[in-house]
Length: 244
Image 1: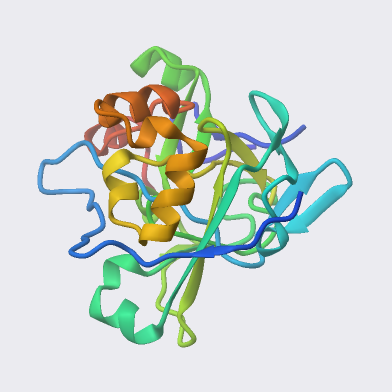
Image 2: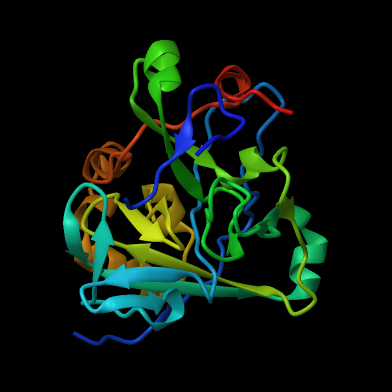
């Protein structure tokens, strides 16, 4: 398949517990790409309708429950440990447009990639690979945030009239998950991110992952949930992309 990356392609595949609803911490401002800031804390989220892959076939992400197994790039079938969901109203998105989801039209990232229209949070990251990355960054595969793809035809940020529900899938480590035919990331918690969640959600996540409440929790969380791949930074994206 041919994309507008320099020698870079998107990668594709040649027990029940209750859901946990949480609110974003306040004050909270989503990371922005720009202003000279290269690093950010990504908040990756799927939305209902996205299909992920189990041993029995694909299912809608909103039907995933803790204990289910999903296909990952690095570890095969892995068990989902925790699922989180947050619904934002149209008014909330209007008040903070940076929270609006990114719509990726079917086929806009390659031949039938994604395999259906896809809606994700702005910082949800996608796996790309190719010799260009190895040459320029010494990495065969890297992650690209959805918001960095808005220069591509078919990739737009939208404000749904009905709002949006964001869904997190958490594994024992940061994973690359097959979704709608593309490899994308799972939820990658940071200690300060968890600190801003509802108390009951904090309690559960701390119980599941003591590293998130350890005295050196920032470092412990970074170790436990080390990024599955490096992320292209804004200035690097200019080098990796050939827009047009």
